Length: 124
Image 1: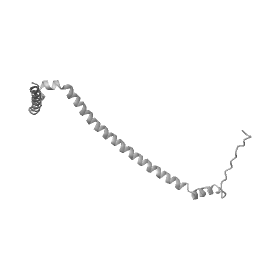
Image 2 (image 1 turned 180 degrees about the vertical axis):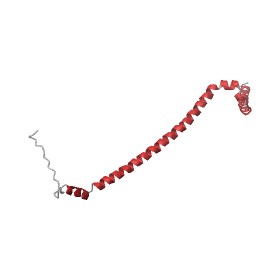
Image 3 (image 1 turned 60 degrees about the vertical axis):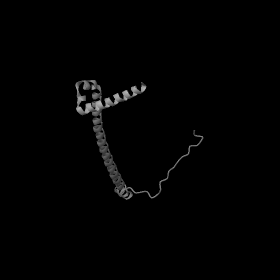
Image 4 (image 1 turned 90 degrees about the vertical axis):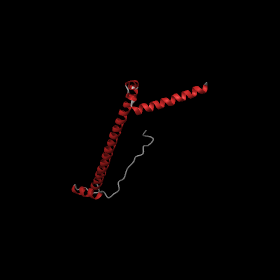
C-alpha cells in the first residue's frame, strides 16, 4: 500500500504542475478567484518592481553627483596649482629685492643668527 501512496502522490504533483502550466498557457490563472487569492503576493511583487526601478534612478543620480564632484575637485586642484605658481613667481628673491629698493631697504648680506638662552637651573 505504501508504494501506491507514493505513486499516487507523485502523480498528483505532476498533475498540479501540468495543471499550472496549462492554466498559464490558457490564461485561466487570470480568473477572479486566482487573482483574489494571490493579491498580497501580486502587490508585494509590484512593490519590489517599483523599488527596483527607483533604485536604478537613485544609483544614476549618485553617479551623476560623483562625476560633478570629481569635476569640481579637479577644477579646484587646477586653480590651486595656478595660484601657487603665481605666488612663487611673485615671491622670487630677485623680485623682492627690487621691491625693497623702492623703499630704500637692502637685503642683509650677513646670515641671520638665532640667539637662544638656555634657562639656568637657578632661575626656576
